[in-house]
Image (tube, rainbow, N blue to C red; front, side):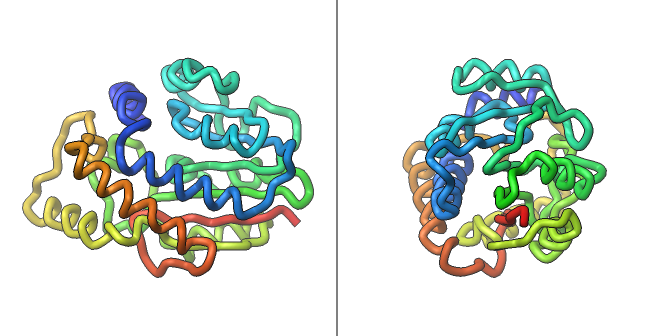
Length: 245
């Protein structure tokens, strides 16, 4: 990811509708797996640390991040000491965890299977992994380019690589479903009209007016009430909850 992009993330991730609503959804998903009270949690690829406080409500958090600039931002949150590390070969922790999360991480990696296998080796027997990824290759945009994404996923493809890493899938779904028609329409129109920008700043991270931001947060976050009951059929992102058996 570009350095300017980390600065942009750190500036907006506590207030932008996408980050705020996604945290509410992930908080609900984690709550549903009934972790032990003293759960040990690892966030692999924590970025600038926007999820750390939410994760700390569920247990004792460790975190790793590839980029030194992002680590610096994440450590300013004073939730946990974020260490430099990378997947699959440089996980800076030796212990085993009850839960490992990788939120929008494995799409950055050349070898997603090797990364998932490495994370599995750091889970306790019966431990959980939660993954999120951007969905659908046809939604590829400038945002993916400056994030240095390697791919976007269909849910079936994500589930396939998770199974190949010897996990048992407990739940899979798309999400950001309610806003999918709007996002897809904008992305496809940009491609058709060749309106893709060339800067190192993503318009996807621009915070709208407070009223619109509040409405989008409410609409996106409302999906959390469905995600433990059914698998949403499409969305801008995909999610898998799996277990080491």
